[in-house]
Image (cartoon, rainbow, N blue to C red; front, side, top):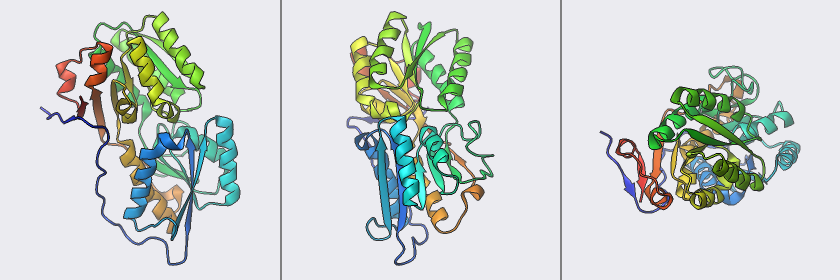
Length: 326
């Protein structure tokens, strides 16, 4: 039986990574363009993970490293900022997920693009294969179609009486279309109907909850996306208001007051993405760097949120949880 770890405060200490190799040659400043969909505040934990990864590799901002941050609140802004980074001729573009990668690849076929949490790089045609990406894109991946099927199983275990599940998906995330198909298949297997609600603006979030309440859903699922990460406080607030239990694709949503998450450690993936960037800066080609798949997934449960919503989490899930927030 896996031992539970209860935490009373939010957040966790960063893992210590060994220093690997040397950074850029003296006098050379690496310019990294970070293309982010959302706000700087929402991205803060992952930005710190990125910076920690660079520090462990010997990079010092202002000396041999410059990070050009570009934050977008709409897909149109994201496209404009990607073009701006290309005009600046940065050495590497860091594009976290399929949303940012899709925009970045339209902007350049030559500047290397590194991702940390791409949900389906092969399926979406962003790379040729995991072992030989080809082109100018590489990084780390978590297969969303497999992940959301597991999410549905966990949510059904938590809510055995539920016959209808809501799904909040992002229209800006290319990976969410195949994920919806996987969710529908899992729902059919589990004997539950799926109510899908697309998200593009903040107003869509409130509309989605109104729809789910009207459709009498027993709970909801939110596949990971930078949009829902940016608006995690609102999602938690509305879940509490409507007393709807939700399972999220990022632990930050649970730290903000959501009920549960089952996901890879996105901060660790972000930190590890710096290893790819470092290799590229030293001459490696993205086409030759195999894509690494996430292997460790964490189940995080917020008991405080469960009590507030009025949900009893089964002991079978609690004993499997990696973290339980009280």
